[in-house]
Image (tube, rainbow, N blue to C red; front, side, top):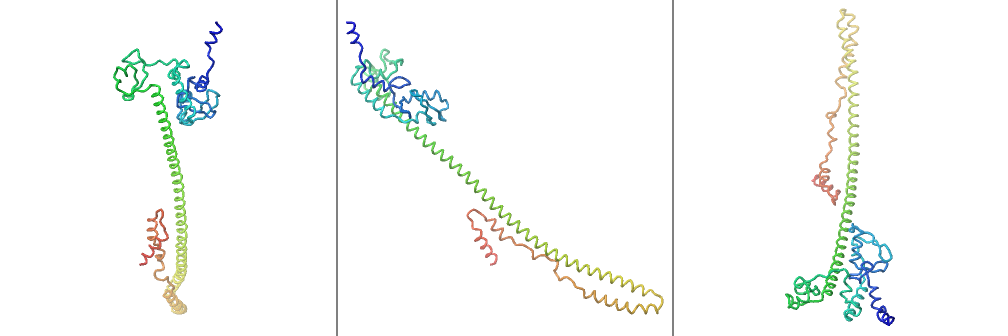
Length: 348
């Protein structure tokens, strides 16, 4: 009898038990709670459990981190989205839904309801405030609050439409999960736009730097051309200055030599006039008279610089046209056309 009783008490594992074991999360050890994420190593986790584990080991999760699979210890590098960036395993979620429907259809066939299977063993059920002995097990769709069965029968929700709490819980949790996924995708798009703006800012700065460098090189070239032209023109002025000064100094030297000769001849003639003897004067005066007259005639016909020889007005440089072109210099401006137009206006 004892052997038979023992044999009747031990129930062989059913396929549903094996399925439930396969649908258990390795972190919370309960059945997966949707959404379910799949790792690259093909192991599945509740996203909420994976998120709690990841957050505890990656306090600065906004910058990404490493997540280690609790089953095989495979390491996965996650981006700034963390666990929310992992792919959902819709196949496992569909299997869970089918399993729950089967359990609801079988009632308490395996010794516990679906609600109990989905609930951790140490979770304390909330009780209704109006009916202290009644646990909250339904959801008022009109008021959108959890309530108990007594409130539906006799209480303030008797005229409201209600639904089982687990089904509403799963539906709203799934809705929130989908909203999170949508928000994560939206955040990803915003981050992509921010990255695009950062890239555009860097491109603008780099292009601006190249434009500034090119502009500085063009102006340096203009400065070099102006300095070279300035040197050439100054050399022309200096050359003519040196030639004119040399010519004037040569004339001055000749004039000085003749002045010295004339002064000496004048002194000789004055000394001859001071002699007392007539005979002596007459001997010297004939030659002195001739020399004095010739020297006086030479001074009258001496070479002289032309009128205005000292002027340098022909070296005046007209820069008004160039100044006007430079003053209007701008990006996209064709300088040659403006320069010719300015020349034509000046000629007219």
